[in-house]
Image (cartoon, rainbow, N blue to C red):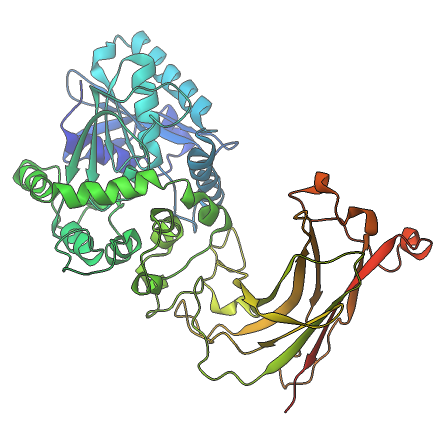
Length: 506
């Protein structure tokens, strides 16, 4: 049986505090939403970063709340735990597994055994958790038939543990614009609450009250507008802040009604996040951050909408800087640094087609956000773009095209200074009628000041003549060899493709 939800939420919040080892055997008084409890048990698993605290009501019938800590973002005091928790979060989305699950099993079993020895019935034990902690509430409630409360918790149903959706053992409270609780389906009841900040954020994201002809809804804008939506303080306000929990009777019904009044738009946002959560992995694993301007240039497919949610939520709305996006950098209207790309391919047959491209990167990651101290370095780099260029055949075995070193516009994407783009490579891929691919390229090493060049060109790669029309090689690129390879020096069974870059002066 669950205690009042404000008490469960307070336990879930207090579980983020470390309990000294002496408190495992010496009870410590804890105030949970104005109710007296004491620490009944505590665990801190160094191997996985799992933490949990059990609290016992000091008043009859002396019920127990097992509270599981969520993702710990206190990197100043808990750097190692934070790093471990983030790894668990990524694994849950990517692999549908949770490496802390066993530690949660062990602690829950220990508390249940201790309670049984103390004569406390199982019906007087409940579970609580926020964020990552909500996963353990749903898993352990399913294992032991316990009741529980989660606040902005990640659901356990989409993990590979057989936790069923629905039921009534667990009550999952979540704020409407919180993305974490939208990432996976839940076991138990789901109660969505919408305060004024949620409504404002969903309006900013064009899920509510969007004008006719507006671009599609954008989850990133929702998170940027309300970066604190995931915080546990909504449910368990900090002492001395004079705030009221959204779970209090005077607010709960009103926020539930706000959700009902805006249900279609809120559900649209949450469905977008759930449907596309696998897209978060690429960005979360690399911890890349991007901004929003692409929404104004076209209607992209749904999978693009939430590519950047995880990192954006972690780094808050301050990450966004103006209307610029390094995934889709703007181009200089009048570039001046023009270069010539020449490719020669003395092949044993006729090519079907050729494609050429230039690679651009931001040359200094100082303009990208700094990583938390436990990671070091910067988030979001290297930023890169591949730009296709036109080439024309100018001889029997020669193709030529032109590109601009200063094609991409230098911009401040993150509010940390201007990011400077430069060309770092150029090359071409040739296709045969058998659709085999022969690729060659060259790195470009420009000095950072001035227009003098020092290229690693011309650069020649060699290919086996017999591979020219060998259909068994599809769809992979044909293997290339360098000029110093002994097999090339000693055989005439190879043909070259050479890439040359030089400045095209007027």
